[in-house]
Image 1: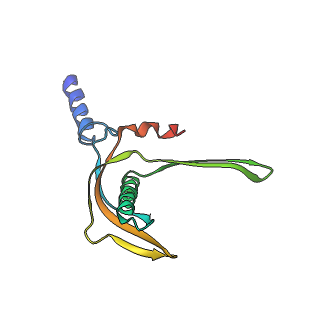
Image 2 (image 1 turned 60 degrees about the horizontal axis):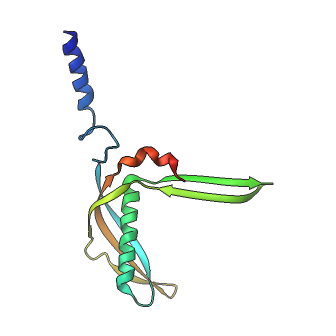
Length: 135
């Protein structure tokens, strides 16, 4: 009887875990829409689009997973001597596609800025446990 009770408790505990096992194993997937932008330099629209897509992918991971921020400030005589801010986000884009009609080029203070949106599926990486080890 005791063995049956232990098996029943174990089954209830395991049923409460997310599919695929324990949290942090990388099976979590989120769908997000994110926007990226880049400056158009020397009229090179293709290069600006590549940079805007890279920015959109980075923003998608940060939007889905979040960002760990670590800030350190060194002060002396009530003045800031040194300040450092580090960020880290752990995830990857499993798949993505451009959002139709989202690409636009705007003039901002005499310069061109290309903006594009993507729809992405972002997966969580296994390395969440080392977020506090940012160097």
